[in-house]
Image (cartoon, one colour):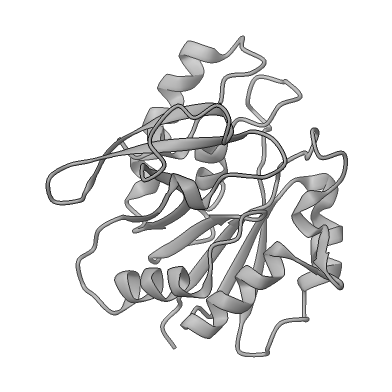
Length: 230
């Protein structure tokens, strides 16, 4: 059976939230992550990889190992920081992407654990990655107005598209609210829903080395996925 992988970035510390928001219940006992897994399986994905921290690995194994349908393969990888400059803050989504390089050798989708994307998005990404033979990377963007919160500010990646609606670059925007808009409501923004072919790991590795050289003493700099795909 062709492996159709969904990787989930779930290694965040949840410092602002105050607890492990990745598996925080929002409907009965179900977290947003559970809805994403369900939608992905319905769309045709058959392999789920959780990217977690070492200290929460057992929590995720207890919740998901041997709990999904038997035709769904489940793997866990840790966002390992050994060999990197020591600091409290994780090194970012681009580093999370790199943690998959020894586990995945096929095309795959990559999402945040705590964002809701909708079943249609998973079907679009599944078909783009596995029904076509384009051997290229993808992203799914959302109009800014559909991603704002009623309960404070958000950070979003403003997507710059070319005339063919292809992603040209992403500008990180922070502290966005309905009262403090920094761009039009119809601006396409990234919610970290990506589709990649394995070649992305070689590109990201080289760029991460350069990033560390420039930011090895920083406590806050993050290696974002858009930087790893340049």
